[in-house]
Structures are given as C-alpha cells and as structure tokens.
Image (cartoon, rainbow, N blue to C red; front, side, top):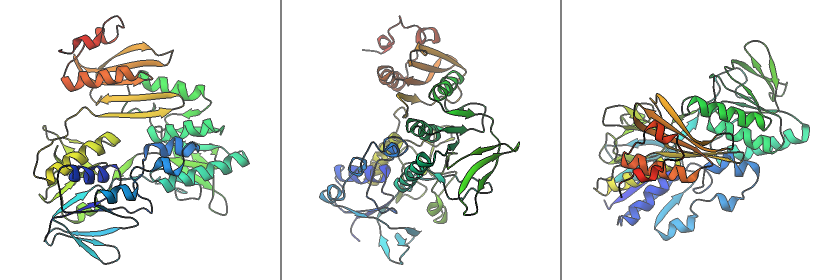
Length: 411
C-alpha cells in the first residue's frame, strides 16, 4: 500500500497537520475529512466579529478548497467517521465506505457541554462551537432586538463573556449567570476577575455570581421565555447562550482502544498509544513529564500540536514545548495570556488598571508562571520571551514600571 495519511477533522489542527506534512516532504496522499458543510474556517471570530455581523463569509475562511488542492490535500466535507480499525488500518465512514491509511491523524476537536436541566433543549437555547451555531445565535439576537427581549448567558467563561459583550454592543439587555463566586475563576487572578466584572457592568451587563439555575422556562411552542433560579426568581429571556465548557471528542479513539483520559492522551510530539496514530488540538490531553495531563483549548495549541503530529508521522521528534498563549476580545479590551497560572500564590500588577492598560504577573514563590496583559501587547510579547527563557523577575520588579524587565533577558 502506498503512503496515505487520513486526517479526521478539518479545523485548525487538522489543516496545520496536513500543511506541515507537505512542507516536511511527505509525498503520499493526504485526505482531510470534515463533518461540516464548510471548508476550514476560523473559529475565534464566531463569538465576536462574526456574531456582531462585522465579518463576511470570505473573511472567515481559513483555507479555501482550491488552496488545499494546490498542495495535493484532498478535502472532503460533510463526512462523518463511524469507526477506526487499527488492525486493518482502515477508517470507516458513515456511508459504509472506508479509507485505508498508513498514518492517521485525530483532530476531532471538542463539543460544548449541554445544560443538564429541564428546558435545556428548548428553542432559543444555544451553545456556540460552529459557524452554524453562531449564525443561529445571530438570527435569534435579531429577533430579540426586534421584540426587545433580553439575552441570558449561562457561564462566565471566555465564550460566555465574549457573547455577552457582543450582545451589549448590539444594545441588548444582557445578564450573565455564573455558578462560581467570580468570573473566569479557573484562569484569572482574583484582581483580574474583579476588573472584568467591573468592565462588563460598566457596559451595562448584569452579572449574577454564585448563580443556581433550576430550569429553562418555555412557552407552549417549547421556545425559551426565561431562566428560573433555585430560589424561584425568573430572568426573562428571548435567547439563552450556554457557555459551560467543552468535552474532548475522543469517542472514536476510545472505541478504537486508544488511551483516553478526558481527551486522547498524547505525548509532547502528538503520539497516541498506537504508533500509527497521532492526535492534535482540542481533542487531546497531553501527558507532561511529571505524569499529569494538560488540556489546552487554543489556536496556538492546535497549530503547534499539528506541527508536532506531522513531524511524528514523518519519523521526526518535534515536541511542543513553547509557552502556551491565548487571547480574548471583550468590548474594546484585548486580553493576552502567556503561560499557565495554576498554582500561583502571589501576583503583581504592572501598569494602571484604572486606565485599562496593564499586566498581571502570576508567581509561585519566586518563579514566574504566567502573565495576563490587557491592552498591553508589548508586555505580552516580553512575557512570552521571559517564560520561554525561564527568566523570572522578582514580584517587586514586576510591579515596578521603573524596572526595565527586558533587561533581564540574556543578550
């Protein structure tokens, strides 16, 4: 059998892997399978510019089919994979046909968690993951504007807050219901959580923290009319957007007997427990040197894991070791995060929080773990250099604008 690589998933990770295989010299066939009607597109704008109507379909395209074809990458859309036969090295499609492979890439992404409450499947209740999801939310927002109906966002994470910001920009009455005592509690320092809460309130969004939701209320047509809380209070709603996290799409991998643990377990090079299969992107859980597992959901992670996975299939070792980074746009503020702040026990603020341009430095003891920058792109770029180099300023230095932190880097 001639060399043939099949890639399941036509998002950021799948496209990156395919292109890295070609630039790496792979001359065999590459088949990219996507389960949506569209070719590869950018997902970050879905909760922002696309939802706001500030971006057209052409701008959303990541790679046009003809661009992939020029690289001899066959794109097949509207294709669902039903099984992987690791012994025969065959991928079975839902129409009963099959594709042989010498190498297989799992870039299956993730799926938003659904609201496990009465009314969670009502008309007008949406999660946001795909282009179709975002378009449906935008259409419902238009109805809410016409009928002056409020928007409820369940979940004060990045997706929820970005949708809330977009809704407010459209002039919609918007309430965010967050079960935790603060926004973005898993990823931000308390001082930055409080700052974001003030940002949203200053733009007219209502926030309910420690929210306990009992059910989604509907009318006779099963269309959402409100969100009922555990204490009986009802928040009227013409649209409910649920942003309570995602689950890795590892069902195919589990059924094929690959090691999975809240994601397809991979090493730093993208190897799975089968030497002929690699994985990349949101579907993965990366095994770290200490044995723990790390799940990252970001464009950077999908891109870098895709490069690593391609190298692995080419017989090379290209571990993904760069500092993780992520961004979020809410109103006119851009948050850029570098590093992983879990375990931080002290923080330093650099800049003026009141002016809206600053950075929060996360430390564990004296070691710099991460830096979160708001409208401070130079800080973010420097932070990535410091973290990549393993260089830590002191807490006092980080908080002192008079100290030139770039000077800490070895020339």
